[in-house]
Image (tube, rainbow, N blue to C red; front, side, top):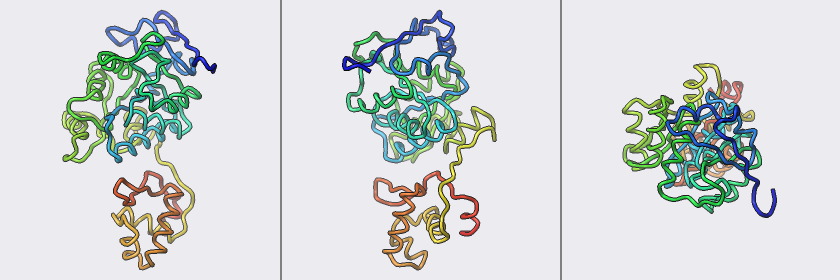
Length: 306
């Protein structure tokens, strides 16, 4: 990559490797311009792509869900498509990269124009193993009208569009509507009925969208039940740590709560929770409470803790 910026390639609509799923659009892009892995985009297979979108003003819960979905689906072999926007989009891309998989960002401006500028590091991370694409010419900055136009490309690329969080109205719901018009599957992550950014997802579920409780729901819908697994096993756990995991699952979200429920000192509870966070079994939310991740313990540890 030169100091002048990434090189740009083109895939024209009449070329055999043009992503065939885009031809389902009434107005497919005449050409895709891209940076990064050209081979990633040529001949993309619809059945192995999932689009993840959501609010720019995402909650901590939404960001965690988006990153976990991106990581787990990418690790399962799916390519994650999103729009590089702040919030849910960026979290999904980061998750896919963390999962060692492939992610494609669809931009509203030229493929060499990083927007938003705050995600410049993520943009370059994507270029290393994935790709950034657009139908806009190089150097063009995005305008307000170009985002909904861009969204139709994201909807067409994915066999399923998953909305993690989205207010009413929002660009995420525009993408979901475009996916439905194309006959694509739409999934939505349920959220609190008191949350504005969950209004859109809860409404989608009420009108027939696939409820997405985790990556396994996406894999089951796209690949068939049992055809793919999103369950990731972590390192073995000592019986004492396995017991603390069980207590966190039962809503013991603080050191004091774990200490009271397990009969250990608050200091020992804090050490156990810190170890579990390092191992990936628990995380802290925005309020500082501990909660379970989707990582599962090896079967032997589960049996000992039962």
